[in-house]
Each structure stands twice: as structure tokens, then as C-alpha cells.
Image (cartoon, rainbow, N blue to C red; front, side, top):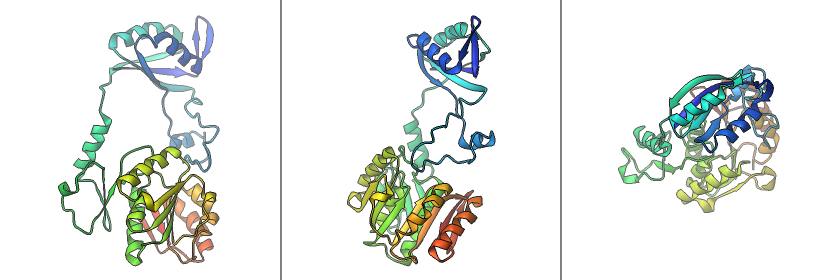
Length: 327
């Protein structure tokens, strides 16, 4: 496979006529779809970069209820770097001769793109990292294909979380997930979660819900992404805790009260849902774990939740730039 890199302005010219960038992509597909064109990467612009350019007011992308209607940050750029993928080098070279007909288009060159087995590489990297991910006080996150007897230094007290990578956020490698697992472990050591109702708000791949179920809790997971819920259900089945967890896309669909609240999600959502989450506690003295935060998020989140809970945080856990608040 060969990659043809282009710099494309918002508007080009062909035979003296203006062609908008989206129309240019349509033209590319019509010209080369039958001549080896495999795909087009129109470029990316991270939310942090969009914030730096003044395209958004927040440096995070937050889907509280639905996707923002305006998020075409790449399309808003005057110049973008795009990539066309072709089956062979000859097909890419042939395409260049036609693309040069467009005034304003810059051809950066052609590179060979080796086809990689990303799934195999992920598996290898997970195992090479040392038989999964160890997280205090007793967790070890491993992929489903790892046989327990082959794990190094696997004490009886260690609890295995088997998580398959998928669309949901959270395979045990991200700092916020690890912080939450650490906090959940500490809470369970201070008081058993056996048979207790727990709310996991923003449950993603289900890793936190599954960890809570492995500790004996009955978990309600709230996640607005149906693809993440499907991934979570698969992970729950792998860990044999399907009967201990139910998922929903809507917090309002739940009527229960909870002995523990866990929310690993971003600051704006934590603030927006604060009253509704706190009112779901059985008692204002019940533990609350909030993560998905950076240092600059702490003051506002602590203030809002301290007022609602009538108490300050017990501890703040940190890993890299990420923070978790434990009430």
C-alpha cells in the first residue's frame, strides 16, 4: 500500500473554475476509485489543538447527551494535510499527474505504508509490558487470551480483570482507569462491597463495573455510547459477572439508591450531573470516587461536590497529569 500526501487549501482551481475541498474529495473518488484508491485520510485536529486555535472554548470534547452539531475542526482550516492510499506505487504516481491539474494543490510525496497487524501488535505489547497491568492494591488487568497459570508472580490475593480492547474507553492502561481501580480497591478494604448497590457513571468498556462486580457489588452502569455498552457486555461475560451488572444509556431510567458512586468522566459532565448523582446516594456519608480530572479541574469539582455532600474529600490520588478525588 502506498500513501500520497497532499496539502489542500479550502478552495482549489481547475481549468479556471473554483472547486471546494469537499467537492475535490468527491472528484478524487470518482477518478481513482477504480484505479487503486483505497481510502482518504482528510487529516485530524485534536480537541486541544482546536482550543488553541480558538475553534472551541473547552480543551475537551464532551458528549454529555449528544454529539456537538459543529465539530468539523479540520474543515475549518485554510490548509490541511491529507493522505490518499493506493494499492500500488504506479497507481499513486499516475494519480499525481492528474492532481497537478489543480491550482493551489501541493504534492508532498509518495511513501510506502506497510500493512500492520495492529491486533497482534497490541497483544504483544500487552504481554511484553509484564503479563498485563498491575494496579494497587490487588488488581491485574490482562487480555482474555492469557492463561492464569502463565502469569508471573500471581499471588492468590490478586484479582484478575480480563478486558478485551474495543470501542469503549478503558482497558486498564489509562491513568484515570488505574486511579479509579486503586480507589475502588481501597474502599473495598475499608468496608465490604458484597451485595451492595453501586453506580458506575460513564462506564465505557465496563472495566470499573466489572471490578466492582468481582468484589460482590450489584452494579448499574450508565453509558451513552451503545457501542461501548456492547463492548462492556462482552467483557462482563469474559469475567463471568453478567448477572451482577446492568447497563443503561440514561441515568433517569434508574430509580435505585447506591452505597458507592464511581464516575470516571470529564469535569464538565461531573459538574453538570453533580446534583443528580449525589441525590442517588443512600446516605451522604457513602463513598464517592470521581476521576477523569487534571490538576486545574480539582477546585471547581471539589467545591461543588463538597457542598452537596456536606464534607470535603478524603484523598486525592494522582498519576501523571491525572487526578482522582475520593470522598
